[in-house]
Image (cartoon, rainbow, N blue to C red; front, top):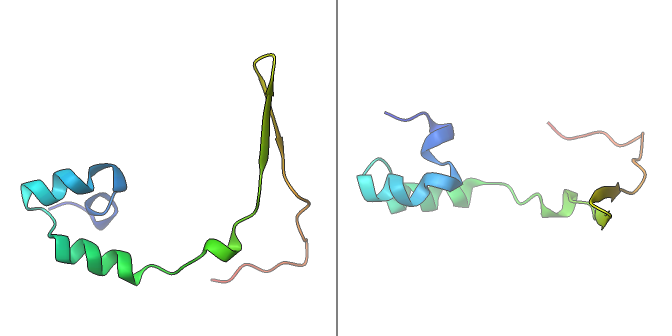
Length: 68
């Protein structure tokens, strides 16, 4: 039996459902149980110049405490 980390791995969901390792209902239940963390995302700007990548991120608020 697959570990849950692999069972619900996005890259092989279709294969797991086709092989019967995972049902569509199990997958739907799993996806419905995930927390919406989209509000925690930050914009990142990536530019490429002469094959070099430059990543610009906003300053991090040092007082920010991540939820557990």
